[in-house]
Image 1 (tube, protein in one colour):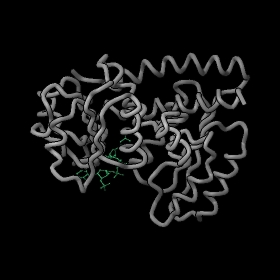
Image 2 (tube, rainbow, N blue to C red):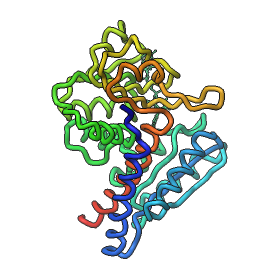
Image 3 (cartoon, rainbow, N blue to C red):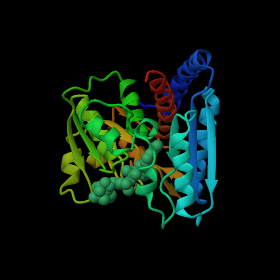
Image 4 (cartoon, rainbow, N blue to C red):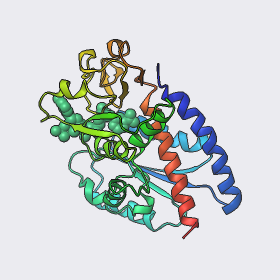
Length: 281
Ligand code: NAP
């Protein structure tokens, strides 16, 4: 069966719309997300466009800062610092990756933890590791929501995550561990990858290599989540060989229309949460 992220996401956005309206009625302002993009990377431009239109769709305010590649680092830093100090801004997102030559870490460090709606800050990642989550990284957060729609009990399941990035693989593994799965994290130095993935009841691919996960790597009846977004001959392709793996999986996410739409929805949910948290200070 397909876990169709687009549909799960549409339902979640409808629910968010109501909550945003309640927030505005109560506090006299809309939750606000500020998005900063540097350079012309077409994929990043599309992601930012979708984030901005997502805000409009659920009734949130968005601020959009666009800089040409080559803009001095100090100018980007000044923008982030002023957004950090602005009380009407609830979330700040710097679209990654930044073009070569920018000190990404230095820019991200200027985002206060409470406005880190991407869930990338060391504090937010650390809290997740301690199973005291505050803001959860959007992509893995969305995957957990999608897993919930299967109705499958996660506790005790063998989960294998391929990929250990700080933004996807690691928080994904922590969320699955927090949900009582037995988790194995694989990466480029893992030996005997297929032997490990074949034992997975839940297999998450976050690698960035088109059709990397083939049917012989997958256990019959596994839940397969494809986080990958790869562009091949102008077409979007996941990290999973969907056509063949689909025949073995009990549930599988398509690309496009799977994890991608949920990621932006969770960003919107995180922004609303950040706005609400501010009112409770
Ligand atoms: P990343 O930072 O490049 O990490 C890729 C991970 O895959 C690394 O941990 C790497 O291992 C591992 N890997 C690479 N080759 C491997 C191999 N041959 N065998 C096993 N592991 C291997 O990428 P990311 O940011 O996590 O993103 C992963 C994918 O998800 C990309 O396609 C990205 O576009 C996509 N993505 C999608 C969404 C969405 O909303 N759907 C959001 C974010 C990312 P090492 O650590 O050893 O190098």
